[in-house]
Length: 32
Figure: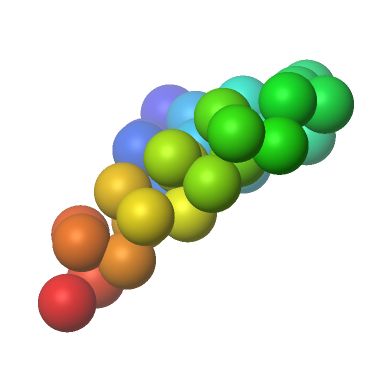
């Protein structure tokens, strides 16, 4: 399992908007 699959799994299993925002920022840092 690569990190993208892990992140997608975390997002799909989470209803916490603050957590989703943290994940989104983390992804943006990885992609920049």
